[in-house]
Length: 127
Length: 368
Image 1 (cartoon, rainbow over the protein chains, first blue to last red):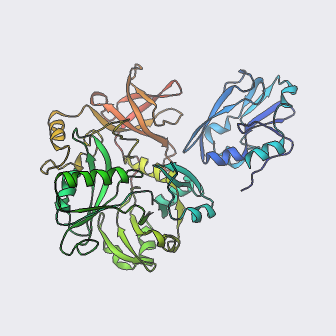
Image 2 (image 1 turned 45 degrees about the horizontal axis):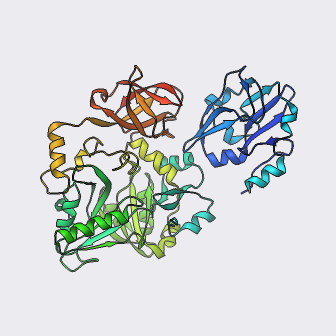
Image 3 (image 1 turned 180 degrees about the vertical axis):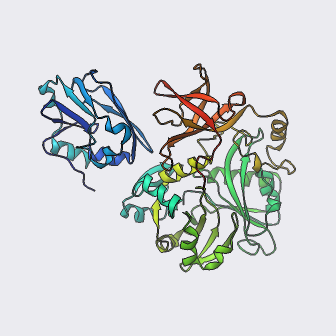
């Protein structure tokens, strides 16, 4: 089984991704992670304005069979959360790098991104 | 200790199954998706490999006495080809395991004209139940043979409204004559199987016991959605069926059949281990009851979460919980003190420190 790992994203060992956008950085969980969890039925996300440090537990994703914490890949301020996931958590399964995004962070220290895994390194970890 | 493998481990791997450890076995938990598998059973049919379930054969002149004294139900009510759900209790009336007891045709597996039984302990309990039966057989000086056949039999459950048709297509129409809890030997895809109209999903269907080495022939002859233990769990939770080791457990969660909601399996006019304790509990009343919970806020109740009253005082614990795939709503099972157990009572379930509003209900959650 092979999983999608976009080249331009950065990754954590705990299976989150982070990607630069026009307004800041988006965060979600990887294709591998959503497949491991199975049918996602619940997502809990922080409030907008909350400040996160890299490694902070910022929310919870639950599938039918499991509960999994999600961690901030980098430090930053929560500028937006994907409220669509509250009614349609299955978007994380269907489109983990697109409509299944979870957070938008601002005030991110770009140097922290260098400490994350690139696509090749993450892919190697999931094999 | 090495995990035990079902006979079709490699077949399931090739089909893309994910596996999980359960009761000391490495079993398929998910083939495609729990939701898809669950829906297949509720809407048409699914097949489960439940070869981790135990099989203990008991036969010989005193087999009936041995079975009667170690299970709560009345085995003398069983004619050959009938089965019953029963509990196995200790002297205090605590449930050690729950099981289905089949009475086999008398001329099979035992001496002619002597009774013969097969019962199904839960996964990983076969050693313990074999020892229990054998120890009591010796202690009571009974003339019976007890045999652990767990790795002689593969076990498949074919469940759902289309299951009877699928099984009769390969087993012959006679299996359709079986009523609920009846069973018979039948030839399935050329293999002699014990075919029972039983299950753990709330749907119509069959459970098939087939010789371990012929498992693939039978499995591949029944063409429907393969289902893992994940869907088996969500299906049984929607019905409020107990899961051994979780909704009751002699160490972690000791419960008697009355508080577990299975008092109908207890026949006090028979002699069995635990009878006197259960007669006293029946007379004095239980302290707690097994109930369902509907969550009124976002969140998913899980095993081990605390239940509080409206003021936040802890009164119980969730033993099983999930998002119901059929309802799209969170559901849970657990025990409450009788004074808090009336259906409609408002309680709170503590999800990650937050008391979510919930209501006490009586399962099943889904009509089938």
